[in-house]
Amino acid sequence: MSSEKETPYASTKVLFVTEDDPLYVIKFFDVFFNEYPREDIDVIGITVVDAFHEPIWKTAWRMFKFYGPFDFVRLGFRFVWTKLKGRSIKTIAEQAGIEIFDTQSVNDPRYIEKVKHLKPDVIASVAAPEVFKKEIMNASTKACINIHSGRLPIYRGMMPNFWQLLHQEEHATITIHEMAEKLDAGGIISTKAFPLKKQDSLDRVIVGTKEEGARLMIEVLADFDIAFESRQHLDMSDAQYFSFPTPKDVKALRRVGHKML
Image (cartoon, rainbow, N blue to C red; front, top):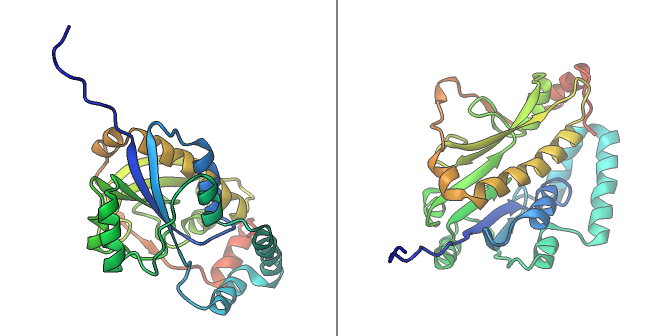
């Protein structure tokens, strides 16, 4: 019998940072909180930041221009119904026993000090609405990671599901990568393909990639050291960056046979 003591197994301590989105991002956490193995992953907290850091009327106007009047009204009814039911990322986190850590900005020095005190192994960004600066990225003991619903580095930037549909890709690529100072430029930890249909809807694809993204995140975090060690360097030679789609882009999406909702 060996005289060496076995190293006790330690679960991965994770702090999530996300945006307050009761329609789509919440789908990620519905799946994650229901399915993650508590013996392998210790969710020590979650920070939920306002989506666009702007008045709600500006967000509504942005969505009106994006979806058009008919789909905007349909989405508005969904939003109101969700609010009336009291469902939010914070409420489902609390139901799962996850502690909430509020902040106006993840780059606030007071928040960063709090995170350092928590000593998360991993800070995981899920649609976080801010650019992470070096100080918050270095606040974890192992890594700061992000989940992105597009193939990198081709679909860097905003709304990758939209652009993959518009470009008639066969699938959307869910990507978990290490965060770097340059946006969407860190090493690739893991990917998963989500099939796209010839006549699809952005709504279906966003929901599907959020749900499957949660399962990919569980796989990565459950055996994080191995997953992180095997990450692949990202070749930026063919990198592109996409901004938020314009009404003209939405018309083009509809012309190729896709719907918004």
